[in-house]
Image (cartoon, rainbow, N blue to C red; front, top):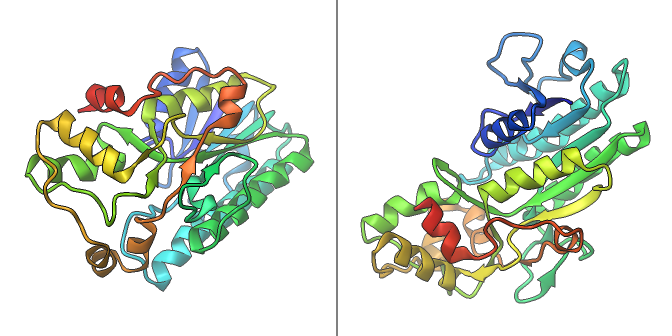
Length: 291
């Protein structure tokens, strides 16, 4: 199969490109810095029509990072890079001579909002707030590809753990300097996932025609922030002695600081029901593999 991927040079995308090539797929990467015809800025407009010619699968991961201090301009970029970027992509697909068979589009567990101890599956209703609203718009744009006869898979990705990026890229250095600790009360649920499992979920979605709709890309065993902190401290052989109070997060990150305290007990019910086998279903072994 010929696969075209946005965000293919990023933390998750690099692993997906490598994994698809291992299965002997042809993979091309859209990048804002690459030479035409695979140069594409999702905010600027549609990708070149030629870049979609002959593509069997499109994987769409591109989006402005959420993990930064928010202001009006940052929030605009977060939304537009996802909503307008996906709209531009689907518009280009509608004009392609031969349309791809499948679109695998990233989404996020931010759709569920702050839900306490409630168990959340793919059938749970969306939550409230900026991220929940963005995710709903984002997924709606991806769904437009379904009207073109394209199989659509939306992966609601959790906190991705991996080397060289993601959540651990910021947390491990702090813990090694004896500056790690719980966030706020520590009672909030963290729907984590090993990066290798995200890679395998994307590959599974590309290669299996029976996969469609929403899949939660999270471990089947979410943990609370307190449990996560304890496991990470054990993995790096450091005590977790510096809790970060809620007010400090809000002071440092503004509105995003509040979302860092959101609780989402997300379960990958669709993947589990389909018989997908997670390489790292438990947090301890996942952290030991990475740290």
